[in-house]
Length: 333
Image (cartoon, rainbow, N blue to C red; front, side, top):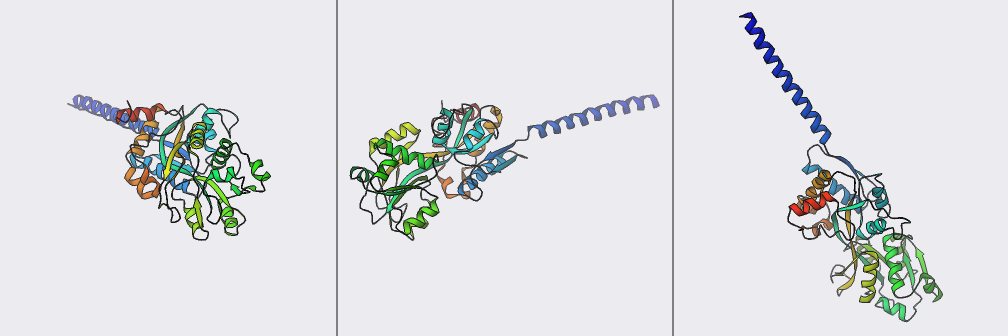
C-alpha cells in the first residue's frame, strides 16, 4: 500500500512539476513577446507630440502589456534617426520621409532602410498668406510684377521652406531675385513672423501646416489676412519634385477665406526601420486601424484619418508588416 502511494505521489509530483515548468515557460514567452518600442514625434508640447502619443496609446489599447515610449523629435530629424535604426519608429511628413529615403534635400545621402506604415494626419497643406492690404492676390502677381515682397520663411531645410523655395524655382525666381527687387527674405519662427506682419514689417509667409492652422487663426484675430493661389503647372511640377499631392483648402476653413484655394499637401506618416519584425509592424498597423474612433477624441486632425486614406503614404515603400495587414483587410490586392 505504502509502495503504491509512493508511486502515485511520485507521478503527481512529476505532473505538477511539468505544469509548473510549462507555466513558467509560458510566462517567459509572454514577457518576451510583449511589444516594447519607442516612437519619436515632435517637440514637447506641440501638436505632433499629441499625434504621437495618440498613436502610442492606440498600440497600448490593442496589445496587452505593451510598453510604448514617446520621445521628442522633429519633422526633418526623424527620418534619418529611423533610417539608421537609432529609434525604430517615428513620425514625419511623407515628402520629408521620401526626401530622406531618396537622398534629396535637405539630406546629403539616402536612407534606404526607411519604410512606411500608415498615414497619421492626412493633410498638411501649404498655405501662403499675406496681409490683406497688399496689392497682389496670386503668387503669379508677385512674380510678374517683381513686387518687392518682404517674405518670411522657416529655417532653411525645413519642409515649409523647401516648398517655398521650390515654388519660386518653378517661377524661375530665387531669394536673391526678391532681394534685388527691393524685397527681403527672413528666416523666422511663426510667432515672430505674425508679430512682424502685425507691425507691417513682413508682408507674407508660407508653410505646410494643418487646416485650419491654430497659428493662422490666432494671427487673423490681429491681422487682416488673405491666402494666395498658385499656377497649376507650378503646383504639378513641385508635386512631382517633392513627392507631394495637389489638394484644395475649402472656403470657410478660415474666416478670411472666401473661396477655395488649390495648393499642395503632404500627409504626416508613421515610418519604421525595415528590420523591425513583420509581426510587430502588422500589430501596430492593425492598432491604428482599430482605433479611428479613439484617435478622433485625441485631436481634431485625427477625424480625417480613415481606412480610405491611411495607406496614402506617398512614395516611401510600405513595410512588409503593414502591407500584410492591408492585404488581409482587403485594402490592397
